Length: 286
Image (cartoon, rainbow, N blue to C red; front, top):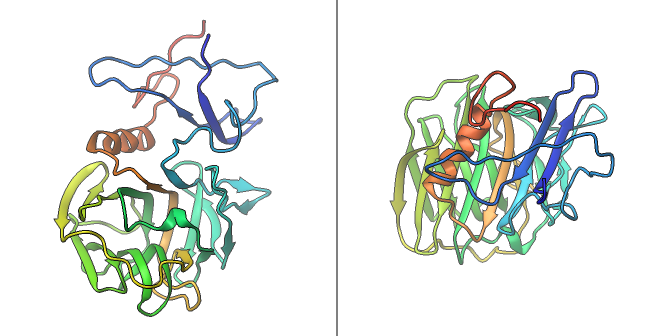
């Protein structure tokens, strides 16, 4: 091995040997297998190989949350170099789609303070997460940048009518995407992209379920406000999500392609293992 890739270890069990890690692969080919190698036994390696915290994620990532376990508690740490701090309002640790996730009983949330990386009005962006709903009652927010009432810039919600909605500029713009029938207690992967010309596209489990174009995304006069996960409103939480969430991510500066989105879904839904091929196949030890 001559060139080391960047990676991040989400979790490792010395008892079972189970490893959950994220590896930054420079290029994946459409037409041929991409081969990477895993080395082990070198104690000089660190959890974030190739430099400081965030090396495993490209510069467009504004937020990456794994919700990995820290001392039996939920971690809301941001894996990017931005290191956005979240204040937990009751979210708890649970089994996620990949390792651990957070659980919300419909009364809980977490908040983050304003940072420019959460301003989505002037360029391309991508938002994604795994979600597992225990009910689809009323509007339920997964991720939002708002304070209270109509004083918000954007929010991503699931509704009881079987739609996923993007609200912007104090609900003066509502973009609804009709989603094929979803079931409770089932993991789904959503990816929502926006472009500078105002085209918004939703993918569920890597499949494009619709796009809406209504001009450039309008922001309210509250662009320096804070935000929440698991609910609307930083200061007066409401519209709580019911269920579990894992791998919440935001890219500011890139509307990820359909190929990227499908590859992320395939990699995360069925990555593969020794003797059990999936998105990747583990070869023999050399």
